[in-house]
Each structure stands twice: as C-alpha cells, then as structure tokens.
Length: 94
Image (cartoon, rainbow, N blue to C red; front, side, top):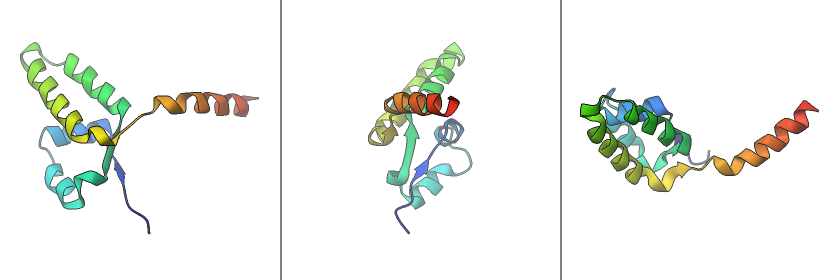
C-alpha cells in the first residue's frame, strides 16, 4: 500500500480551527504533513471570514492566515485543471 494522504474539505478545516472534535489530536497522530487542502477551500473559508460578524472578522482572518501559512506547501491548485476539465466535458457532450 502506498502513502496515504488526506484532503480536508472546508468544514473539516473550520472544525480544526475551532478546536472541535479533537481534530488537532487526530491530525497530529496521523501526521500533519499527510493533510492537504484545495485552493477552493481557502476561497470558501475567506468568504466565511468576510461574512463573519465585524467584531470577529480580524481574529478570524488571522486564524485563516495562520492556517494557510501552516499548510501552504500542501494547498492543491485547481486552476491548472480547468482547461482539461473543459476539454473533456466538451468531448463527452458531443
């Protein structure tokens, strides 16, 4: 069996940042270096920050920036796949 890697979705990242479900302990036990996120997750989390109450916005932004800095080497870029996706979807349609 190869190396196991995990892709965290937006909800899991939010739970992690909010200290819920012992995710910090679970992720530490497995190894933080095995976890990845997509750049769309950053987008969704930033949207959430911008929609948060003004009294929490700067704190939430700092949390997000800290998280992003912690995982920056494992943020998966999705934009490079857009052209291939569009090409394949067009081929399937015809």
